[in-house]
Length: 584
Image (cartoon, rainbow, N blue to C red; front, top):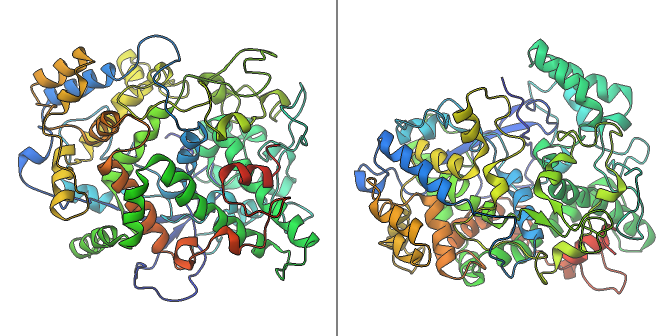
């Protein structure tokens, strides 16, 4: 058994009925160790109704699997950590990862029907829809921050105790944060409380409860490892948010934004009570508004985003209705499209850099080194081993968000959205290390090969089939890319591989690759129309399905009682970071 660093959320009871919400009662289960947020399961389904025509899918053969591996190898950029630079700020890469952890879990993990080492033959689409479950609540409710609602028939007192540990032990309206330690210096003149909360700092009752929850579901050897590493583990709802340092620091900004909201409401006459509920509501509303206006419109075509909003995500709700109709006896509700989760939303992998201008210690000033490598950003986390001795983050590794939120000269930009991945993503430091077979180890360490095999296993339609369906239904206006290889005349090796493949990958293209190729053909600074539609439709649909979301309420930062020091609204990610006092 593998310890899965996932979170599975709960939700607050909706204030009133909505025609857009599922009428299926949620299934609440304890969190999967070592997460904290409770598990509310939901469904995955196909945006394109399952089609019998073979041309809508990749051929089912070992040759196809081998060619997918070959394609994955060609997607890894040769050479150093450089790559084609976009005009997008780097924060969008890891903001997107945080948002992904809010919506989905399981499609990127090994399950009985998605094992990448057994990629042939795929199971039928009906089997995928009836057995693959989403171990996250598909809502932007910040359950990874707040832990969800610890109520349900299988939720024990120990689970509730661990969730309660997310709150400050004495200032109960505030969230617990951690404190960075020497060696110094910090990247700025702000305070040192810049680490995620970790078990080393919590009261024994919370630690003991976490150990009892873990012991009930882990083998003796797994529990021994869990217990030994517990002190440095982050006390957060979704442990995937401590997999790399940028996402961990992004998560910290939510804890500090909440706490700063309490301080602001206490010191200003706004009419809002300065309590936990007020701060939680305002944090969620600002976050959801920024997810659309800051993130979606930063990575998608803004015209597509606006079109989906004006259309009230009608295609997304038709997808949910069609899914519910054909899965009446097996559905849990709140389905998300597999084409989104397994393919389109993995576009962010291409934006990852091999190294970053991280702060004054790991930047061009070369206080310590001229760059922070991607491998280092995975090491300086609770599971990476580099903070093992202190059990806390060293001050020299606190991020300088000013280098991430405003795109400027390289490397203070994200890589382009295209079909090339940074070399470290072919040698992922936290993956495959328990494998003894060299070939399996190489497979698990290759992100491109994993993504391509996963899409094949879960029987995704080809990019051309999906594009054609979306055009026929009026969701997009552009025509399918009949021959994807034509995009790559400047990459003759890739072009010829696609054109000469036995699986005819140039005209029956894996959906993930198709979305990246579409973006590349448009310059790589945003998704193309199909990618933009899948991502925007899912985001907007999820928000509209929640009657309390910022989009459903028509919230704008102008309406918030929270203000910057100059009395302007908090209407950008830079202002969010400054309000949270994690950026000067």
